[in-house]
Length: 205
Image 1: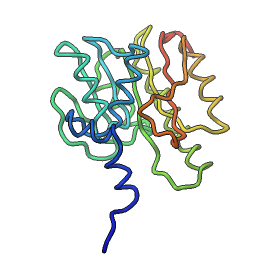
Image 2: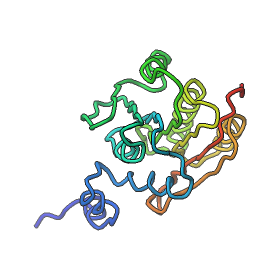
Image 3: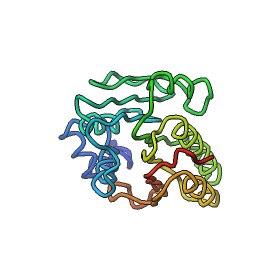
Image 4: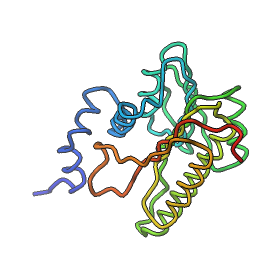
């Protein structure tokens, strides 16, 4: 008698997975952003939001609901992303300079929020996965510095490790306040955290 894979069984028992299906979100990660939003109020109606590493699109779904018809959401991912109502979709590697230039051109003006739930293609080697995560975090920070208006916000997923304090320091040089937060929707065994940075200092180097 065959058995379902262990991860599949865990997924079916996961209340956030079940809730995402019931609420029409593409992934359980929607609740991570909703919990960040509840605590920090990073997105407001009418905002321009850039969602980096957006696939499968659950964060963009949340953002569109919050910004409303007067706001705008631009989603970027290296993988193809199925269309989402109210979302402008770009396909490309967010760490590539030409893609970053395309994002700036598409947004067409200052943004209020840059957010990044991107994770690297994990290798299972914790140190390497951490380094790859830090590369994505630095790319998100670079895009934020190009796009954000003064006072804007940045949310980045990061993996814990020895290089994380350096990335947090770099974010603190450009934002205040900066918090590190693990939402309840993150699995307990996960080593992901989120840097939540507000109050962008536009004159920061």
